[in-house]
Length: 108
Image (cartoon, rainbow, N blue to C red; front, top):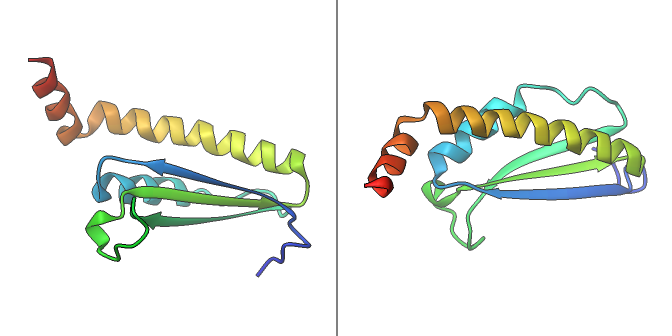
């Protein structure tokens, strides 16, 4: 495990999603791409909005923590993550049947 001394720069990104299914799908889509740099470490977790519930279905927040050896490496890694996240969320918005149904319901 990397220590805080080895990887002193860190950032945690918490992304709330509508439900556990979408959060879990985003996690699975993003975690397949390994972090390329040995100077960066990242971890993923699904959490609940109130942080007290252990019910899996309430875990709808994708939490990503980055640790890096330099602030530059942290910035580069997070920029790449944000690009990937944008693609994943875009595909979800275009192809997810439940989201499309919710949008059409609100437009009426």
